Length: 138
Image (tube, helix red, strand yellow):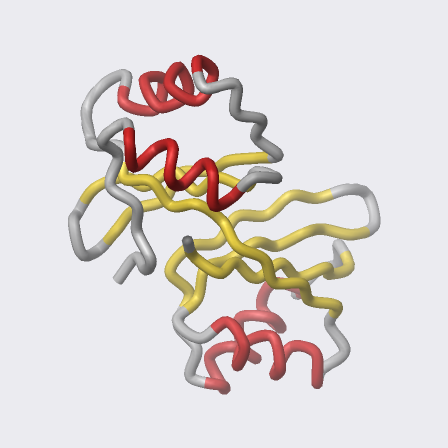
């Protein structure tokens, strides 16, 4: 499992720049970043080198942050690898809240980041199906 940081930010010009500046000043490196927006607010999900430190610095600047655990499954870099993972999860009756794909600088392979209500069970299930689970991306 990997700890993920979610930041709730106003959907305004310069918002991402302010967040990345806070993290840069704190010496926190971002491995992965994905954003979802609405008219007024966005959720920025990221995997960083030091989640507690990043959250502390952002909260100090007034940002609402949440940390949670996600499953990181290496999926391989060939056509259909994500589909095979999703078929495996479907056959296992696994419910996903969301997923996104990133890249591991260690293995040089794509990694599916999965948020599910049953993190530990899903990680064990995928390990049993031959998927390599990651605890960090770099």
